[in-house]
Amino acid sequence: MSEHTWHVIGATSSSKIHKKGFVPTSSSGIIQSMKVQKTKILIIDDVIENIQVLGAVLRDAGYSIIIGRSGDDAVRLSLTTDPDLILLDIMMPGMNGHEACRLILADPETKHIPIIFLTALADAENEMKGLALGAVDYITKPFNSELVLSRVSRHIELSKQRTTTPLSHTDRVLSVAAEGESNAVEFKSSIRWNIRADRSDKDIELAWAKTIVAFMNSSGGTLLLGVDDDGQILGLSSDRFKSTDKMLLHVNNVINAHIGAEHSQSIGIQVVSLDEKEVIIIECSASEMPSFLKTQDGDDMYIRLGPSSKKLTTREAVEYLKKKKD
Image (tube, rainbow, N blue to C red; front, side, top):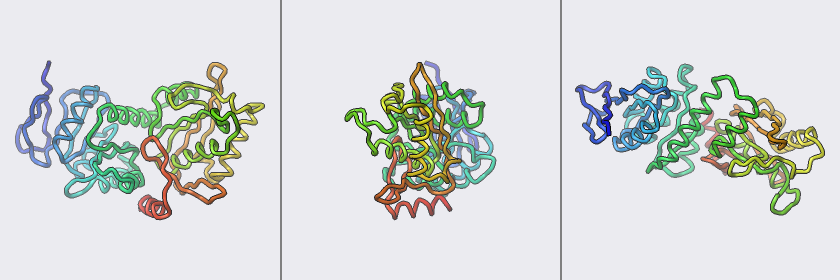
C-alpha cells in the first residue's frame, strides 16, 4: 500500500503527516494534500484525531482536502483556497465555528460555499443556531464514515446544481430520487391520499406542506410527491384527480391556504411524467421572511434538522429568528 504524504502550510518546520503516523505541528499549522483532486473539502477542527479520521475517509473517496485548526483558519482559507465545501467544528479556542460561519457567509467571495458543522453537541439549540446562520447541515461526533460521505457528496452536488446549467425536470427527479432523503430532500407518496387507509386524509396534505415550510425557513430543498421513502417512483394516480390541471390546482390551493401566497416566489412546482407515472417536484429556496404552517390550531414554525422537519416552540422560534436576523 502506498504512503500518502501531506504538506503542512504555515508551520515553522517541515513537519509531515503520513497515512500511518502523525508528526505534531503548531496550532496554526495547515495541512494540505499533495494529491490534486477535482473537488476540494476544507476541514476545520482543533482536534487532530478528528482531522485524521475525516481526512482518511475523504481522501479514500477521492477528495482533495485542505485542513485548518481554528476559526481564523476557516475564514482565511475559505478565501485563499476556494473550497467546494467546508466541514467546520463548532467548539474551538478563540473564534468558534458559529462566528467563522457568520463571517464566511457574509463575504460575497465565499458566501456560496456550503458549510456543514461538526459537533459533539447533540442538542437542538446548537443545531438550530448553526442552521440559522446559514449552514446547510451538521454531522455529530463520533463520525460515521458512510454518513459523512453521504452528506458531503449530497451538498456538493446541490451546490453544483445551483451554479451550473440545470438538469431537465425528468433527469432532476431521477437524480434526486436516486440520492435519497436528506436535510434538503424529502419524498411523499401522495398528495392527499392515505394509501394504507385507502381514503383522503388532510394530514397527508399538511405533512408535505410542513416540509415546504421547513425548507424555506432553512436552506431550501426539494420535495417529490409521488415517490416513496425508498426513492421508488409511485406516481400520483392514487390521489384520484380527474386531470393534471386539477391536481396542480389542488396543490396550489393547499400552499395558499396553509403557507400563504406571499411565499410563491420561493416555491417552484413542476409535474413530470416518468413511464406514464406523474410526479410533482417542488423546489424551495430559502425565504427571507419567516414561513409558518397555518392550521385551525394556529400557526407553527418548522425548520430542517437532518432528514426531518422540527416544530419549534414559541421560544425556539423567537430565538431562531433573532439568530437568523443577526
